[in-house]
Image (cartoon, rainbow, N blue to C red; front, side):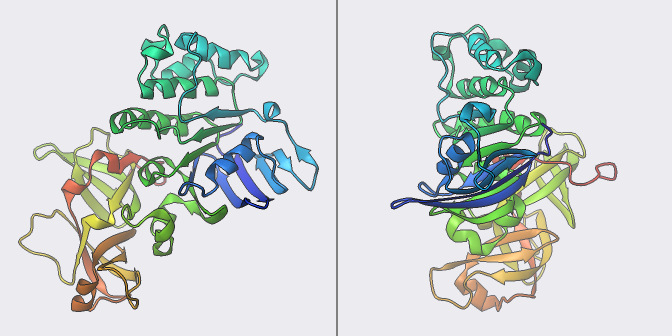
Length: 378
């Protein structure tokens, strides 16, 4: 199955104490199901896996129907060719890593195998682990092996149900690059369940926001994170914008990297990546300030001219802070005080200058992106 296989889901379940109405389409890559506990994320995954049967609707991957109520199709779980990675690796403790991987491989007839053990071992960087037992592995290592075992079943779809939830920050940082590699090179659609905004922003191509068993919004991460109306669902504290950028060059003297985007560039702490490398940059709203004139006598390197698009709750009462959406050639969000909005007379359509602290752009704010622009002219 190609990397561009369309995942098309439109399902309904209605019961006395439970209701699910989920609908989205995703063009390959990694689709993140995002929402708070009880939003319906795991129920959607169970429907995809065939563990929970919808009452109506359909689930399709490319030209393959996993479920279609109108056509009377409901493939059994074992016929769906779906790989499943859980919060804990659920590895077989009596088998070494190689044995766990071989278990996944042996479940798939030789003629239907798309990946071999060497392919998966190289992709996930687990060469040194093959002779070890699960009890000797770190949490991040266990998850990499679990992902490898699922891939070796040659699935048409990979489900990852909060795979980082049980890991500490260091182990998460260890495994995130491997999930990025999986997204870009595995060649199958991935559905990734999470309630962590930072994971979704770094990994997802498509974001599906769920709340109370319903799809609130679905689309590209960059678009959804710039919508102020979704703040009740995506969370105010972690609010921010996501920009598709690329490496323009490096200032080795000062340890900085210049990142380009559609209308300008941003300086960030140095990243060891080649010129033209696409990245996804997260800029938190709390790290952006606004002024009516270009700031002078400041240490801030990143000052971008823009136009105010929207001000969250500008005419309403509420707390001391508001989020301001600014178009700087890409959507950017600034969190400022309501008093600042009034004293500066800020309004939609007004020209402003957005200042971003270079020191606020840390490594977790940067993830590998997709080539959405030619890099030859970078």
